[in-house]
Image 1 (cartoon, rainbow, N blue to C red):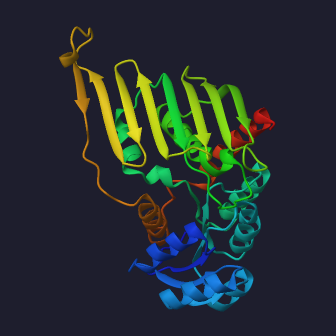
Image 2 (image 1 turned 90 degrees about the vertical axis):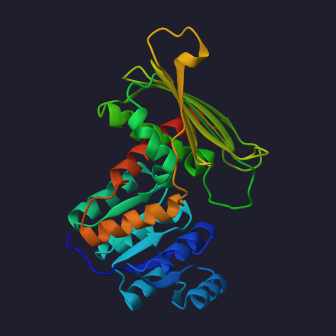
Length: 320
């Protein structure tokens, strides 16, 4: 991939997340924000006026008018495949919000297109850029049990997908990343899942238990009908316990000082100081750095595809 001096970026999608992307990109001196596209004319008018950029309601017309180097696709999940396929087919680098697509076959096609065109295809698994997750990685060496909880209140936001593809997929990606950082060949060998529809036509709550070939067990819980937000990971291994608070962000490591614990003081508590950085801003800066330098993204299309594949297997088990 050729290096770029100052990439021209177009944002597709002016909803809640798309507006955050637009805000951050507009403030990045290393890129030029050339436009916003959304099917809602009112949203387009507001954002184009606020950031003094071109606005469009049709992404194909937007491409023809501004000819961007790269796009950020922050539209409803079922539209990701069609939009990303169009831009990759026209030699435009893509950052696609999670999940990459709704079907694994679609993800495979986008990955193939990116390889054929020597293009960047990055997936917006933003928790990869959470400072607590990044700081925890060096302490994880032999995980035996991982417990993940991602709970949040009901929102009127309609994404046309259930809680597994909407929320749990964040943690699926993190678990796959952490375990395969230790053992690249680690894979799921058993899966149990339960869930229920409560307020919508898709699953609103889901609980999953996974066993990996390394012997590690993983419990995942996700809900979008809880009273409060709660987003934590707990990782247990032979000599330590690691607690990650996504939202803080905060990280605590409880580690044995010696082989046999006789008193509480034999346990070391480590609380790393974490930078107060917005994960989405770090994700976007990483994408831009890849555009400028030609490096591969931290979260490639293949990573998004692998998370989607496991999410789809969970959905088949749920059968709600």
